[in-house]
Amino acid sequence: MKKTVLVVLMTVLALFAVSAESIDLGDFPVGKWLDAEYDAVWTFSAETIQLYMTDGSLVFDFKDKVEDFDVKGSMKGVELSFSCDETGRDYTFIKGVTNMDLEMIIDRDNGQHYETDLTFRK
Image 1 (tube, rainbow, N blue to C red):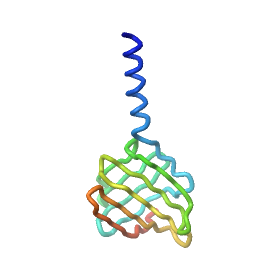
Image 2: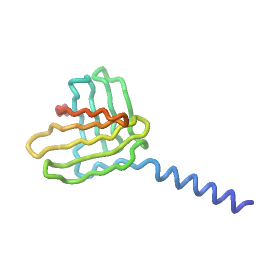
Image 3: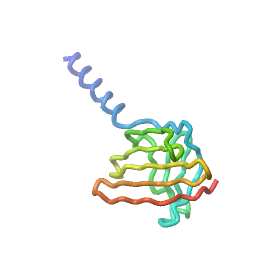
């Protein structure tokens, strides 16, 4: 009985460890970028990625909610990508080599696609 409970507990803990990845930006810059179309600010820090409205109200905190997190170099620059089951979206942010702005690409689970440029704020 004790072995069964231990095995079940270890399995549950392993599932939690697999379901959410930590955020390690690596070579991707930290800072804030404005999505002017939605009046929203994307904030990238060493611990998390957050989305705020420009009035300062928090829309979403991605800490412990990202999956398939990846930072890699590409022909365009440094590319950060991840998915989030809670929002039902796949996110890609590309930091080019010529300026501090980002290209953002969001694909929703329902097939909707959104692309825009984010302006560096600070």
